[in-house]
Length: 308
Image (cartoon, rainbow, N blue to C red; front, side, top):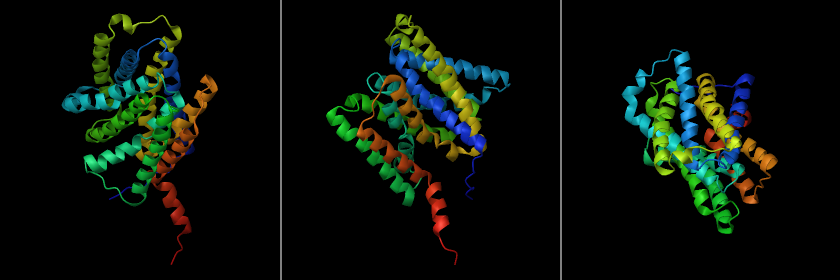
C-alpha cells in the first residue's frame, strides 16, 4: 500500500531552505579550504571532524553504536560511495571549477540514483513522467558537458568528469543505503562518517604524508572546521530530522535548492560567472528533477481534471 505524500509545514520548508544554504555553503568554503590543503587532506579532516561530532551527539543522547557491528561490510561500502569518493572528487574538481558550476553537477545525483536503481539493480521501473524527467535531466547534463567541454567554458573535461563521477557515486550510495532501513538515521550517518574518516585519513597520510596534513593558512583551517562541524555533521542531523518528519521525498527537494544558493554566493563572493550553458543545464536538470518528484504535475492534473 502506497502512503500519501506529506505536506510540509512552514517550519519544515524553513528547515529545507536552511539545509540548502548549509550544503550550498560547502561548495563556497571549499574554495578557501583548498588554498591550504590538498583535496585528500581536506576530505580527511572534514570526515574526521564530522565523525567526532556525530560520536559526541550519540554519546550525549545515549545511543549505542552496537547495532552498527552487524552492518560492517555495507557501512564500509556506503562510507566509500557516499562520503570518501564523492567528497574527494568534488574537492578535486573544485580546484579548477567554481562553486556554482560544481553545485549544479552535484544536483544531478537523483538522476543517477534513479538510473542505477532501474537499469543496474532493477528494483525500480521507469515509466511516464519519471522517465521523461530522467531524459530531461540527462539532456541538462549534456548541455553542461557538451559545448562547455569543447570550448573549455565550464573547466577542463577531467574536472567536469570528477564532478559527474561524484554524483554517480552518490547515486550508488543512495541505493546502497536502502539496505540499512533497520538502523536509526543518526547511526547510519555516524557509521558511514566513522568508516570513511578512517579510510581517507589513512590514504591521506600515505599519499601526502604528515606534513601535507597541516597548514599555516588560517582561512583554510577555519573553513575545514566549519565544513566538518556545521556542513557535514550538523547538516546530517538537520537532514535526518527533516526526513523523519516530512519524509524522504520532501527532503530530496534540497538537491534543487542547493545550486541556487551556491551559484549566487559564488557570484557575490568570488566574482564567478555562469555560462549560458550553465544556466540552461541547470534549468533542464531542475525541470527534470521536478518531473521525477512528480507532485507538482500531479497536483496540476488534479486541478484541471473535470469531475464526471
